[in-house]
Structures are given as C-alpha cells and as structure tokens.
Length: 507
Image (cartoon, rainbow, N blue to C red; front, side):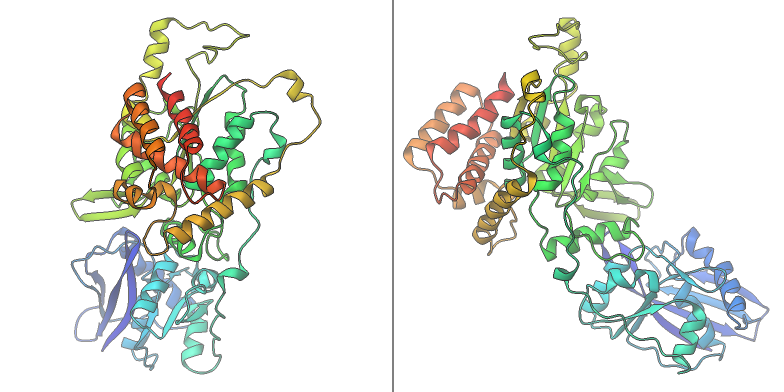
C-alpha cells in the first residue's frame, strides 16, 4: 500500500515542498530503504522511526518498506522527516486510515515516540502559508515559533501516540492560537547603559548616529578608553525591529537552531561579537552543507569586531562584498545559497601593538616598523567602507570620579527611533530601510544638495583625496545628521560634521 505525506525542506532561508512517499509491500523480503538523496541524518531516521513506532504501541511493518523523498534531485538533510515517515508508515501498513491532504508534517522523533525541538520551523510555516496549506503539524515545543504566521492552523504535537489519537478522534489536538507581533515585543537588553559611561561625549554622539542611520563605525584608542563598553551599550539605543525585519531575522535563527525552545520570533536587533580567532566560514558562512555565519546572524543588527586588526587578513577581506551588497552568496557543487547580511559593523582597535601610540601620558614602546605592519593588517578598501572613524581618548580622572550621570540609553533611543521613523517615511515606496542602505542612485534622489554644500564636498574630495565611495557615504551620513535634527534639507553644518569623521580616517 502507498501513502503520501507532505513535508518540507529548507534550502538556505527558503523552503520547498517535499512529498514523502511510503510504500509497504508484502511481496518481498523484509527491508527498509530511503531514496531521494537522503543525508546521514535522514538515513538514521530508520532506527528512530522503528523505535518510536514500537514504543508508541504501533506495529513496525515486517515487510519491504521503501520511502521516497520527492523531488528526488534535491538533497535532504536533518531529522525533520521522522514524523512524516512514521505517519506514512502507519497509513501504508493499514494501522491508520485518515485523509491528510493539504497538511504538512515536520518534526524529529525521540525513541519513545515524543517529538523534540526541530530547527527550521518558521520557514516551513511561511511555506505552508504561501502554498495555502490548511494545517501544519509540528512539535509542541516549536508551536510558539510558528504561531506568528497567520492563515495556517498550527497543531502542536507532543508525541506520535497523541497524533494517532487525534486522527482516530479519541483525543483531538486543538490548534495553537496565533500570536500578534505587538504582544511579544520585549524590553531591549544592553550590557551597559550610556549613563554608566563616563565622558566620551563625542563617541556617544557617533554611536547615536550609527544607530540612527545604520552606519558602520570604527573606534581607535588606547586600552581602557571604553571602546568595548561603548559598543556593548549600543543594543540599548537601537531602533525597534519592524515585523518584516523580525521575520527576516527569525528565519536565519530558525534554520541554525538558535531560537530557544518554547519561544517565539526574535523581537530585538541582533548583537554579535565573535572572537578574533573566528574562522572565515564562522564569520561569512559556508561548510559542506552551507549554513549562515556571524554576518548573517547579525542581519538587521550589529556585528561587533573587537581587536579588529587581530582578525586574519583573509577573513576581513571576505567582508568586502557583504558590507557593500548586504548579501552573501555561498556556492557549492550541489548549488548556491544566498543569505542576507545587512548589518551595522562596529570595530574597535588599538593604535599600535602596545596600544599607547599617541597617548599623552604613557609612552609607546613599539618600533615604527611594528606600528606600520600593525596598521597594514586592515586594508584600505575595508576602511573605506566604514562611514564613521573615531579616535577614543582615555578618560580624565575627574570624569571618572564624577558621580553625576549623563543621558541614559532610553532617552537616546527615543531620538534614534524618531530619525528612523523619518527614514521609513522617506523610503516607504522602496526596499530601503535606513540611510546606509542607499546606493549612488538613491543618494542623488533622496539627498539633494544646494550649491554651498556641493562646493564644500568638492573641496573635501580634492583636499582629503576621498574616493567615490567615501563621497557618497559622506552624503548619507550627513543625511542622518540632518534627520537627527528633523531637518528636511542637508545643510553646511551637516556636511561639515560628516566630513570630520572622514578626516579622522585620513590622519
């Protein structure tokens, strides 16, 4: 007897409908085989399904069993086919009679028949919605994650036995109630509040501009100046995620298994801080079965690279294309997958190996050649892609001992959110999200300059030897500065402040 059960496969961040065909035949010797390009985890489903059926009180068919995963030319990875294979086996062997058309089944089985946490649920739920599938049967622990998708009935399954009772009408499973995005927004968390950071007013201003416009920021300064503390305070002033952005981020975290069991979608902007020993694959993504790296896990959030020059040069050079394009494409023999990577890059570095070059108090012990080699670890093209270059000086002792607190992160975040709201209104008819997303064509359309501003920029290009990329990035930063003041037009003072950050790079 033949049974067909719908399931899904995640390819990159997209999902494809998979039909699990189970044929149980008594005409041949007992055997169990899976075809359709199954991976190692899928092959191991044989033993999980065998044990789960027996421990759930069902009989494992002592016949020839063939499982086909169609389309057959698509590689199948992961243990999520356990549930559809087991269900198909119950139907094909005549132990269960039920019409399961227009339903998707997706989940990993334990040996006792219970369903465990399974990666990639959100893309499958979005697939069900796009294909107008009536019901989605998934592990109970994943139901909160899928409930954000409307238009699909989510059935939380505890075990194979509970699914059997559901279809035999002895104990019906109630659909999981849908979850509204506005009801799951949580308070943002930051390791540090800006009010806890003494001094560094200029650095706080630069951090605010970075958050408001999505601009990349580089901080250079002596050890202990507060560069890392400033970066880790950034989550507290980031603008709120929109629902569309939250779904984008959650899809990435879902396929990588980074969503905690029992929770829903990601509601705060990611903040990733990989160590400088991170490999190229760890940062960019890849592997024999390509998975997102840190830059994709930072999508719509922040990637913080501390001790920036200590990262291997070939790892840093791999950042060029993702910073510019906002995506990363990974090609393998089996095909190409593309992951989004629109992130704000925040980097921190010392001015020299010992860290005290240019410090007025503590002398630098480095030889000129060592300083030169240290600075050359980071290439010019990478630095050219950073909008804000800032020198962070050590904090004076009178600032450290001052008990008066500065402006807190909550107040700064309100200004950042207002600036982002202005940008959302400006770009509502485009796919752009913030000022940093603009290309040269968009800059000309949304950032007109008067004659005085144009003249100042022309002089800056000549004097500071700015590249074409730097020219447009300066205008985008000036647009953000103007948005912080709710100014409709870019003025001379906005261009001048933006150029100050470029001038720091050239010193």
